[in-house]
Structures are given as structure tokens and as C-alpha cells.
Image (cartoon, rainbow, N blue to C red):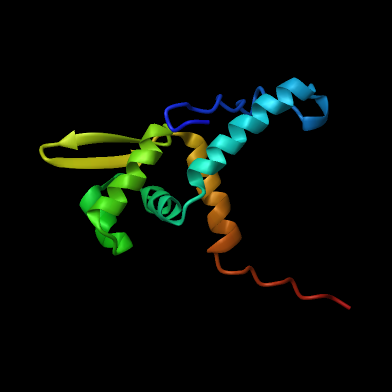
Amino acid sequence: MTPKQTAPALLTEEEAEPCTTLSAEDMMVQATAAAGFLKALAHEGRLMILCHLQSGEKSVTELENLLSSRQAAVSQQLARLRLEGLVGCRREGKVMYYSIQDPKVATAIGMVYEMFCAAPKPALARIG
């Protein structure tokens, strides 16, 4: 898939079916969409940007400071996220503000946070 192409949209929860009921063709369509979505997330800088955007809209300068990164690097990753339709932006004067546009992103970032960043939950004590 070239950078200008976007992956087909994933099914909504209402439309989703267990994989075993999908035809091979339908499963391929969904696997292609999922792979495109995951490729867009598969970069440390983009993941960190999305984690920060999870709490709300941020300017490029705010993201630079939060990430301790150069403006060019942050802007490059934001451009990729925008191209993929994962974030949106608005301009206020000379300042660009970015926010998460695709609701699947919030779900995915929440799952990544739980898997890799959240403090481990204490194990329940055994009785007996």
C-alpha cells in the first residue's frame, strides 16, 4: 500500500462477526485494513504522540516539549498520522492543534497502554 492509499475501513462492532463466520475474501479485506491501521501505529514516535493526544488536543509545540523532540520530527510523524486519517488538525493563527480523529485509535492506544505502560495489578491472594 502506498502512502497515498488508505486501508479499507474496519467493520464497526455492530457489523463485526467472529472470524470463523467470515469468508476467506471478507477475512482478507479485514486483515488488509487491520494491517494498514497497525502499520500507521508501528513507530515509537507516532505511538508517543497518540498517547499524548489521548488526553486531548495538543499544539505541535506542546508535543515537541512533551516528547523532547525537534519540531521537524514531530511534524513528520503528525503528517503520517494525518495522511492515514488517524488525527485531525485545526489552525488557530499560526498554531496548529492536533487531536485523535479515528475512534479506533483511542481503543488501540488504551490497549497498548494497558499491555505495556500500566502498573501491574496485584495478584489475588490464594485462599486455603
